[in-house]
Length: 198
Image 1 (cartoon, one colour):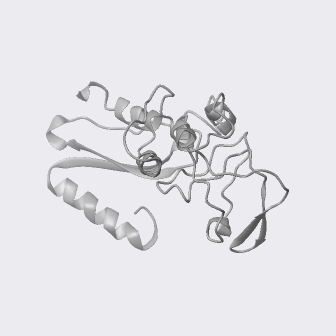
Image 2 (cartoon, rainbow, N blue to C red; image 1 turned 45 degrees about the vertical axis):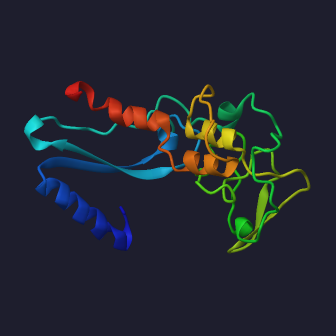
């Protein structure tokens, strides 16, 4: 919504909120800049009723370039989880579409974006690195075991606490719930800036 042809959709929505009596601000935030071990850019829109005379300011990044702390790595987020959790990840073979892009990052980096479809979640960092053959084709550069992330690993990379119990839905549905969620640490910081308005 923030870029290209879709920008008119955002502008139209903002205009409607303002006509309804709200002071509205928006910003694209990347979860990795707020203590989440994944690169995930999303648009956030915050509206405050104009009569409340409260000015909202988005939180500034607290991780990464120019911040006090380094980006959170996959190693830190996944520490202590089992290496091969049978039944908790999609073990289908890697289809050509899956390997049409680089879906793996190193242990020391944040994960690629966690998505809601279990077939398309990123590779676990223990998987062999991928090498680009041409525009839409990547192959494993070495032999070794490769797998997609498990749903509990996706939850950890989204910033859910380890104590959170995933009791509802099939494994496939849990991937969808996790991938469609707003990362809790990022949401907490966005809401915290509402301060005394509560």
